[in-house]
Every structure is written in structure tokens, then in C-alpha cells.
Amino acid sequence: MDISLEVTQRNHFEAQKIAKKKKLTNDIDDNGSEIKKSKLQIEQSAPEKNAVTAGSGCSKTLTNVRDCEAGTKVKPTKPFAHQSPKKRLQLNTVSPSGSPQKQAKEKFIYGNYNQYYGYRNKGRECRDIRLEMFMSRSELFQDKRVIDIGCNSGLITMEVAKRLAVKSIVGLDIDRALISQANKTLVRQKKALPLENEARRLHKFPYNVSFVHGNYVLRDDVLLEIEHEQFDVILCLSITKWIHLNFGDAGLKQAFRRMYLQLRSGGKLVLEAQPYDNYGRRKKMNDTINAHYKAMTFFPKHFTDYLLSAEVGFEGVELMGVPENCEEGFKRPIQLFHKK
Ligand SMILES: C[S@@+](CC[C@H](N)C(=O)[O-])C[C@H]1O[C@@H](n2cnc3c(N)ncnc32)[C@H](O)[C@@H]1O
Image 1 (cartoon, helix red, strand yellow):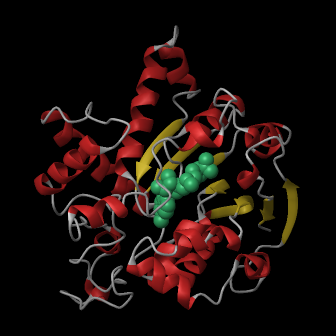
Image 2: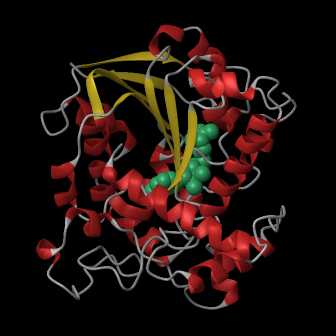
Image 3: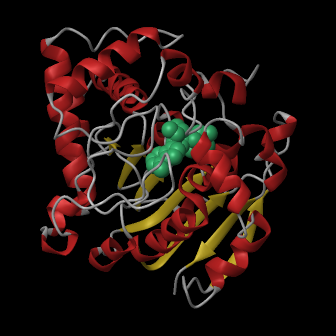
């Protein structure tokens, strides 16, 4: 597995252990108030070990990283090049920024909605129309290694794991509380199995799923140099806008390049990008987002050309489809990029 995933997974388990000790893991409610308390307590308990949590994009203690408030570089505490790759990949704790009002306003800055599938699939008993599209191309998924970037609470991740017989699927999200929620669902699925040992032995659902907390955007482009091919399919569904707003043109371009590098030969990127007219109403969420919004020169209409350019390297693209039959704002084209 990718070092960054290993690191974030280990951090995730350590943070969970602490949370469990403090009996905090069951405290999540719909309005998120207890989540905030849990996160703060976990961060205080394990300041160096936690990955990025919701509410802010980066730490003031990071070395040689983009400062999310100002969009500038933070002065390194130790020369970045002298750190081990593992150390460089460690994501530090975010200290809560500003007043409680500011924190509340920043709650969903990553699109990390805790009721996302409730409103996305309104009136459809949580059936996500995109799954039907994937099921009509099941050969793309069968026995494949998949990553779902920005998996939210893991609904799509688990449905893909269950219905499309993937070899493995990793759900990754920047929001620790959503990953904790996804893990709880996973545990429930395991407990409900009549033949748990058999599923485990055969590595079948739900034993083909794992969830990892982390930021897909690396601290520095230099880390792309140690990236390696490890997935056959990457799901990048309704997350480009959030990466773009929080990490700017450079952050999104880096993420696209990372996707390409993480795909094995013959791999596929399944991309559902939000259109630009969807960005405007989020531009005032915080100063960083506003600054990135204003400075943008790379727009969704440029994504396809960029992904096919020599800077990234995809060989071809096809339109998988446009989900009909769903809320108007969610009728976004889903593209399939091929790596040679
Ligand atoms: C609008 S939701 C989409 C959820 C899911 N991909 C889907 O389409 O059903 C966006 C998700 O991406 C996550 N996210 C945003 N920026 C991220 C980043 N830099 N790294 C990992 N996850 C991120 C958010 O926390 C949120 O859960």
C-alpha cells in the first residue's frame, strides 16, 4: 500500500484507540456538535500523530507546506529535504482557527457534509444513480484494486465493494468524523454476516473494504516522486471543486497528476467534476477559498485537456454517461480516462 495511506491509516487507528478510551466514538450526532468536541480532544491527546481533520486544510506546524490561511509557504522548522519520505508524508494536526462562529462557518469547507447521501439521493432510499452506471460497466471493477477519493461516509464505496466484486477498495476522506462513521457501518456489516469467517478467508465484502483518513493533496509536489502504481480504478466523484477551492489550481493539478501516477498500466480514472457555475456560492466560505477562487486560471472546461496532456499523461477519455433521474444539480457528466 502507498506509504501515505499506510501512515494515515496507522494514525487513524491510533486516534480511534484514544477516542475509544475516552468513550468518544459514539458521540457523533447529526448537527455535529459532539463531533467537534471529540476531534478537539483527540487532537489534544495525540498532537503529532493525527492527520488533517475537517475544519481546516493544514497545520501551522507543517514544514514547507502551503499555509492554508494565507496561501503562502510556512517557514520550515527542519529542512524539508532532510526528512525521511515517511516523515514528509505525515500530516499534522490542525489547530482550530479563530472564533467558534468562524469554526462553524468553516464546518463543511471540504464538502464534508454529514448528510450528503440523504439529500443527494432524496426519495430514492439511498440508491445512488451513479451505481447503476457503474454496474452497466461491471468489467471495469471486477477483481480490481480501487480507491474512492473523498468517500464521505462510505456509501458509494461500500456499494461498489458489494455489487461490483472488486478485489479491494479503499475509501479516503479528509474528514475524520466521516471516516469514523464509515468504519462503524463497516463493523456493523461484518457483525451481520452469517458466515463471517468465510467472507474474511475469501476477502469478500465487507472484507474487501477499508477506510483511511487523510488529505489526498500532498504537502509538496516533490512527494509525487515517491508515488507508485497501485490501483486499477480511481473514483473521483464530486470532489474536484473542493480540492480546487481549498488548494487552488496547483493543488488540483497535483491531485490529477497523483491519480495518474497511482494508476497501474491500463488503469481507469472515473471522474465526476463539478461545473464552474457550481463554485460561486462557496467562494466566501473562508479567506483561503476566496483567494483561490479569485486567482483561478484553470477551470473545469480545461480539465480534460490537462488530463490528456503530457503533463499528466492519460491516453484517452470517454463519456460514461450523465446520470438522469436525480436532483437537477447532480446531473454531472461522468468521464472515464484511460492510462496506457
Ligand atoms: C461532496 S462530497 C462527495 C462524496 C462522494 N465522493 C460522492 O460523490 O458520493 C466530497 C467529499 O470529499 C472529501 N474531500 C474534500 N477534499 C478532500 C481532500 N483533499 N482529500 C480527501 N477528501 C476530501 C470531503 O470530506 C467530502 O466527503
